[in-house]
Image 1 (cartoon, helix red, strand yellow):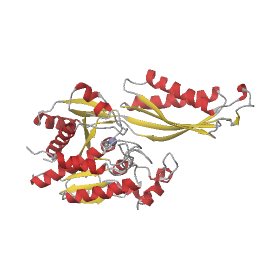
Image 2: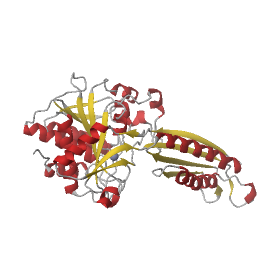
Image 3: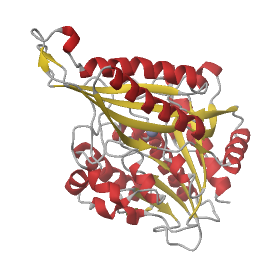
Image 4: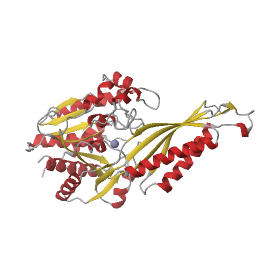
Length: 412
Ligand SMILES: [Zn+2]
């Protein structure tokens, strides 16, 4: 039975981890940054070494093809992939595993001379982590990118997407041209670390994803009044930070009590202006994110949180601005892809369990254009988006072999 080379996969995982490596472990490799661009060049080299055709689309997505040199071929392609960008101070496996395992699968299929009825390709989607826009590359590929929004897309620090892509040699305004022709993808399957504790706790080696959560991000700007922090009487203060703080606590309560059992919420960005200990905060900005696998629940929570922000601001006599940043739709995975993954597991003698993904993934965009699915492997301690994110190498090998046999079945 055909199997991946763990040592080759391991070497590539460790080689990719050097781009943007941090002294204490982990990696910061945000999309379009110099370490990302170096990693992208390295990846193109590895794809060529594996004997694959390579191409890069106008959204910066990198592809390696076996039996195909682009997505205009008459026979629809079976696609795999993930992303090689990371969050700041992220781990070495989130995204990287799916790209490099996909590359290894195509490498071993080509080397072995295994006959496949459909062409195969592996993709590295740009800006999955959303420094400039969540799931950017796969959105462009799936025709879900709004051309009018591109000039306004920017990172939290204000760096504009058009400038970042320009530095990397791309014209961001042409990213929508990356949209794949209708019917050009036969199926999509992505291998990823679980990024949560469920598989490890259950002692199950493989997760078969049933649905991927939708993620909504909103920037809330509370406009109060900056004042002298010593001389302004307490009752006259219009403190923007206190409004933001009240919202933060009440929004959490709202999502936990009014959301579904899987709803989660986070406020990970807080900025206070002018930001001095002797000035009453005149302006406070929050980025509020929430997730749920049910589209209806997610929309209702978003509406209720918006209403809450207005209510908190009104009772404190200040103004709030609500700026939607991004919203991804929850996506169910294709039953055929799920059952194919399970059949691959069975053929390898591996137990599997169905679960939903609490993290957003490129596979949710692909679900809009083809039959899409995901394979999860356990994350050590359930840790992810942190420098000590890791999975056991034998778990990685098992996941890569499940991907290999899923791809072979989908391409048969
Ligand atoms: Zn990821």
